[in-house]
Length: 217
Ligand code: GTB
Image (cartoon, rainbow, N blue to C red):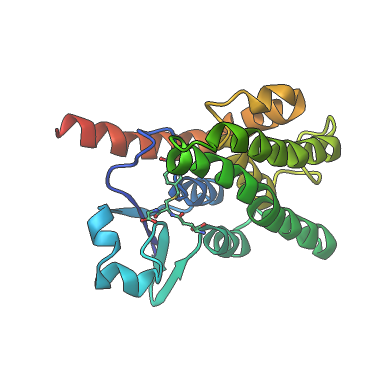
């Protein structure tokens, strides 16, 4: 059965692949699983039909037969469990890869998102110039730690896994800042993820949505 995911009809990132459908697309591409995409507007996301799929009125969602999922991490985990290539077969290695998935979402992503959100929610406020370095330092603490653990390895725990897939998408949210430049091994790690053919296919697919919306006016 071909699953259907949802994505922004018009992504605010203008095709940079920062919205969370990107990680789901990438996982599906790594798995070799074809998929359909239903594009939703910001308005439609808040309506009952979409809310039935996603209680918080967001993208991405995932539908496959009578299964409906939300939360990009849960969706990537579901894909990884059902297809080869995203989680190791060995039980301990698999547990460690899942640990990295959760570390990406629960430890690395929150300070990165908080910094990003402060920029557009608090950018004009009197306190912003004092708050930004505090938020950036919180991100740096995690980047330091992650950089130390990765060292000169290609991936976080041996072979590429769903843990790397999520970590790379989280670190990509620092694109447009110079923060990753301070950590050459992390910058190279992100670049390594971005050169995977499955990443490229996923990226091009979401970019095509942006380009089509632009050419339709
Ligand atoms: N925890 C959920 C998950 O991982 O699936 C979070 C889902 C989420 O934040 N979805 C966002 C959404 O639907 C899109 S990805 N927002 C609409 C709303 O809440 O009304 C977040 C996002 C949006 C835009 C950019 N960007 O333009 O750069 C980057 C990331």
